[in-house]
Image 1 (cartoon, rainbow, N blue to C red):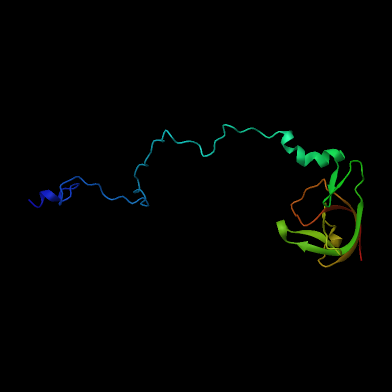
Image 2: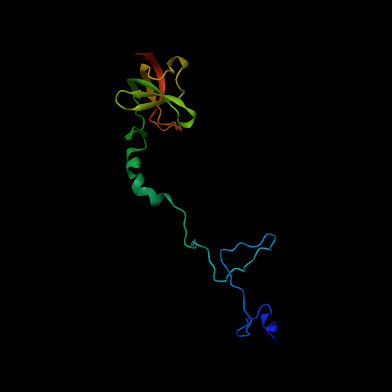
Length: 161
């Protein structure tokens, strides 16, 4: 009689069917088929895109007004030069430094604190860390580099100080 109450799935005390306790953190057994749950009909995307409209130029008009009033131009060292104005050459004296960032590159740390990134690199004769140099160059705001140490400059003339 005691053996018939120990049947799997029936509790000995009340006689009702029982379900084994489940642990939500339990991993399925190796080789077990994945549990596929049907999607709830009320499930919706996380973001409602029904009222999405792409941006138009008029959305940016307040920010573009100074640029349009000036008729365009070029950004140089944080300031705008009107269109047609020539970007001035830069002359400086500084120290050649090697930066190990992005595989390594040579730059010139000017005495005024600006770090100039030569657009074509430095000639091998000037690739000495701590070398004092004077140079003249043309700022190149139209170029983009990965070094991000300072303005990119096209070296026109350079000499050891």
